[in-house]
Length: 252
Image (tube, rainbow, N blue to C red; front, top):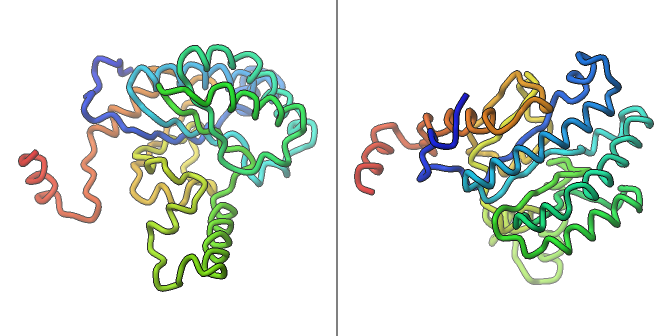
């Protein structure tokens, strides 16, 4: 298990995205209801967020609830909404005290009013956090985000603010919900599955992918640092040859 001291402080990823998978299977192994797995997952997020802040990560984006998750059994969805409100009540003061800014990715209009109100209040009260930004992807799907991005760009063309010939990759990035954030250098998925699940498809074009078998409730500081240590052992080439990358490193 890696420790903070083992990490190269000059190569800490600025943005880490996580697919927090395995809550339900963790609960099943414990003989518990699935909702207890999600509750344990909130505790894991608390620990990972604290570890990320200590390491110097500036953005931690977590996949909390996808656009497809509405298809789950109603009792599980209702339990998740209640847990979101409970988690915010439990963690809000500590988030503010530790300099955590909260940002939402996705559409929270479908969130029940009691949970939405608490979420918006927490965002407002924690808006001045400077240590790390916790980006919660709720009711989020990357294809849906990209469709909305195209709509925003189309409206700008209709308004005469932009021409089709002026559209670049940067234009698309600037109209995503993540505009202003660096793209994730590292994407972690827990729970043993190896797929992206419609998550940040544009933003992770050059991200390093890290899959582990650990269920999310058991993922903590040591597991996060394991992932970062693995990331630091990789050579990020961005289409260049290994020799080119090594030569550029020598010239720094």
